[in-house]
Length: 587
Image 1 (cartoon, rainbow, N blue to C red):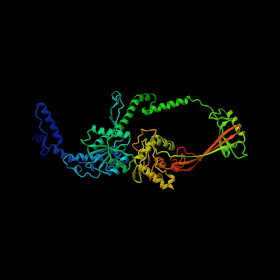
Image 2 (image 1 turned 180 degrees about the vertical axis):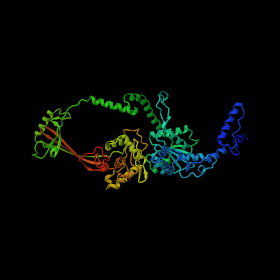
Image 3 (image 1 turned 60 degrees about the horizontal axis):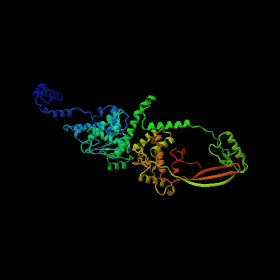
Image 4 (image 1 turned 90 degrees about the horizontal axis):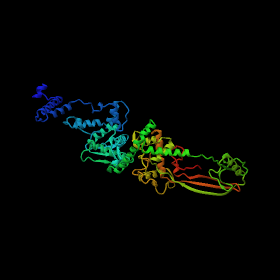
């Protein structure tokens, strides 16, 4: 009756009126110590009817988002971010990646079950009963992975670390067992919000970050943050999976064998992070004062700077010494003096002794000594061949790339900075568009391992068998398996860098990849194939000569008698510029 007299209507009061009245009741009860009656009957039903009667934009709430928000959602789902608002909305709906609509649907179903989007079918990319949240690092992986895992998985990217050590004193406490205090990264608010909402409506969470120390730590931080935000219900499983290549078989195998987060790997990453903080927090302010514009100094930069400084000091202490070299040119009888191999003679040799004394690198310290020695050797006669020695040697192929070798070789052969090399490799690993299909081309590119899987070794050997005949000449009897004995603690939980599919030859990608990406893929492909091929064979010839009373000389040369792996891994500067055999020699 009180409500009816105030509102002057017979039907159900509005939620605003009810809220105002309820506030008055609470206030009067507090002042006069009266018992507070239960919530006014009809409030829940009225609120539900009001919510159901509100007009909604067609097909969810994407129209209410700004262009910037739509682009962020496209990025999270691995979709292109170019275009006007209508194109972005259409792209999200076509991919089923409209997380905002899914949240609205879940909220609508929590009311009275009136709206068709609230309690109706959840197919076509909506929330599925028992749907699993899969968290990856990069948005670029989502489009590729979504083809493998099916609609029962919702894929979201955390885009790297979601928590970090704040740049303030006390973030790492050595006096308390190196206790570390992490905070949510300021730039990851929207990412964390999306992860929390998705975890709350999921039956399980799968952490599929990269298969290294950094990826393991990111997975741990995501799990910790979801727990802190209350996004995980009691008994909701949180498991870790990892795969070294983005292929259907590798991803499904990883999903079929989930595991717990590897805490030793997490602690290893945190140890490096703590050293970075303890070193960089003290060094960086000095660097900022001395070199304005520099960003920071830490565990790596400070040691590298010391090595450079020590090397520079050695250069400054170096005392240059003058020395001369003599080349002897031998021709047939009657060849005029002074016409050696460089001028058309047949044989070039280098003196090894002079008047019975060894002629070392600094044996001719000035021009006068060199001129005197040249006159003595040129006037000596006759020169006789005292020994001819033939020998052969085998040059084994190098192992497939690990990260350090790839950076070094690509920088030298392709003239690319290390940072650009890793960016290109990241794109090849996450997947590129090939004839309308997104495909990953290489395995994980951050590795210390030189090992290839048995399947990859077999695929490489089959390729060599198909391309070279007879196969027994081009393949070793047993597959080659490489182990880095110098680095016993190398990260060999995953493979060396190799092609995902050896059948995708570099020539088949011509015009489909940007030039630098194609060149890097060719470098990786050639190195991996060559690692399973036969050794190259070289023949060496050494000729010793002597002139009585003057001195001795030696001439040597080599030639390749069997290409072996060098047929695929061209020497540096060879055609294609895509790889080379270390130590390759000219004929």
